[in-house]
Image (tube, rainbow, N blue to C red; front, side, top):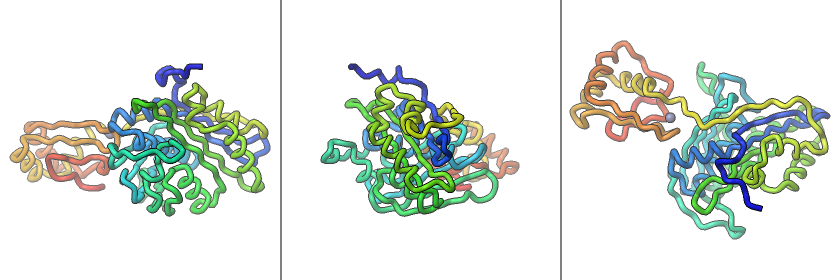
Length: 324
Ligand SMILES: [Zn+2]
């Protein structure tokens, strides 16, 4: 049977429900379209596509399971592998964005013929998970990486740092031309008071199902993953969230960042380059400002005091804007 083409797959969605007996909560998603958009935005090669896609799936699963709007969750995998940092920012409302420091890395496949995400991320390093409400300092929890395979690392974070026994499966299937054929994830969390076997039972059901990325590539939905995971236990009401590759950057925010640099710095940019070009790390968007625009921002700069969008933006042709 021919597989569906990626563009004909169902829209990206997240669903979540507790088992009928209240022992576990399962969150499942398919993310094929968003991971393909990320690949296009950053021109990632397959192993980077897989690492970024797995992190995007994990970030959305955690954001939905742990946070309430308008908080956001940032996942940073800082391993010793050639990809460098893998960074994802996700919201409980279903927005996700992210990047890989070295998107063009190539590695030979594993002996089993799979993309070697563990080696690409690195098996030594740290996973940081930050929750940011936009007020005050973000909360950050950190654990050492277990394998660099992302799913195991995030499960380790939940189990040790948050003391919630959990299982995480995230996967991305990449086709021969580099196109994303399927991306999906499932998070299983043991609910308070439930016995040890509950998570293992759901994990067993998922392993019988096979790789989640293949379920997505074959046209399976998040609801299909949830139903398979809770086939024995049954489930109650299902929460459903549409998912999208979406960045919070904008021309206005970038302009405010520039204004915060002050007239003197902006005059320097005009003298050196005749303008400024800033690229958003998260989504690859490029914002260009000509000399007249920089002049106007310089005049404004006494009234401006920075912005909340410092991290993803850097100026390749000028000094980096301040970190917030
Ligand atoms: Zn952006």
